[in-house]
Length: 605
Image (cartoon, rainbow, N blue to C red; front, side, top):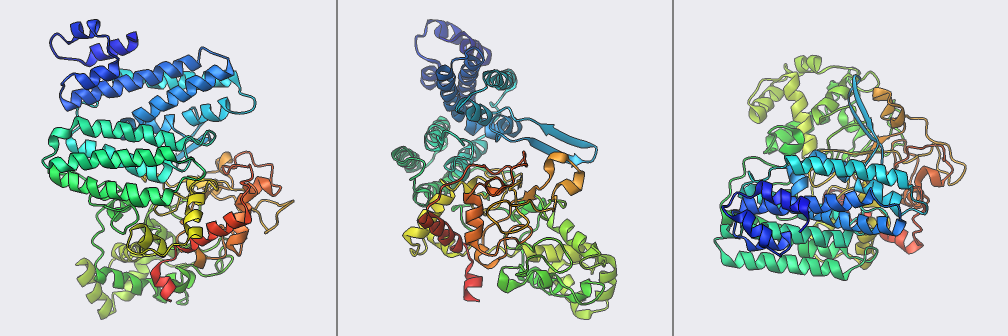
């Protein structure tokens, strides 16, 4: 038996005589965990630390070998063990999990002008891209592996998951289901090996093992058998596929969503009381439903239910030109409902950027293209105060409409409050929060309400999540940059967007994006990743409106972003620079899929 593993088990075991058993036991640590009848929380602690130690051992081996084949072997072993650790680690310690699983990109954290952190990545993705490159940098491999090994050792010394309750365990299992569906099968954290499917099998097996530790909570015996069947079918489906041809649509529809339904049933059977609402609603039974994501979570406060009175009041304010000093501009000027709340212009009047859609904008952790606002309410105030937009202020507007008896009555009914600048801001924000319909052709099909998707549209989704690598930035179910399954961060990317729609000798657009907020040099040309829902109606595209058609957008990505069209002096471009080599039919399929994301309200219009 591995001595470090033995030491860990010695440290955590409290049963009388257990150490004597261990010394004489010839079974592996994994078998030991399964055989000994422990309290579920103790058994979970044992199992987790055994997996952590095994992962650390393989990473440690990477620091001691310079032979490329050995590096590849030990990396694959370490990564498999990391996927076993993933369900618990990602729930128990999100910061360390994010560090270990980070993309191989410079990490910039900008809290304010006095607190800007720039960190080089030292993660499993960093190792993968180095070890499996044409010319691995052995010294860099050793350095990165050393940092990962040190981090794992800290976790081994300080981790305690014995406090976990049954509701925590249910959250752990569900989080793994959501992660697998939204990032796990997309190659998000396996950019070179594309080992996502087998990674998912490993993580699913561990999630099932964790659930089994708590099987005494089941009051309805058939539910236990159902979980076993669902996991077995899902793992078989993952095993039978290969990354490029895997049917992700069928996987979500026939495996993930049914498991979410079973999860809700299990929570009721266990009679758990959830102390708070996570990003995924505790009653969510489908990933692509209006009920799946909690608006309260994204708002950071209680904003639901969004009553019809609140929505209609917010809509009236949204269209009220009195908000502007000139009395000629309203929110609807730049966000027209028939264009999915965009304006159809390359750049909005008086501004230097394209008008983004407001649909599904509630599901973000940052607003404006440069994320200079942290909330919908803050964005609204900024627009009203901006001299190039409304050139007004909420205080003046509040005084103006406080003379309108109909407004006074509507505020009293909707918010039980007098007219105030804060309640005006909240009402407009709540209206914007209502612009999430979840009734597109895509949504209705994947929820199994209708069956009208074409083979081209389904293939487009599978390409979006596979070969075309779109889903590594535009994450389901919103298809924006807010990263599941925690939805705590909305990513920004440097694509190398040109100033003109050309395919060679391009020049980068002069808009510096996020750089203008904190002047962080390596944040030049970074912009927030928007949702592609209703994208068929929101032309022109990109922050500067440079592309008029979806065909132009797809070709830009297919060529490798800015790098592929001649903008080769941008070292911080986050978009992979290699061409995607999409066929004409694959480009068509991608566009056909994106068109299925148009909500029924706009189709009817």
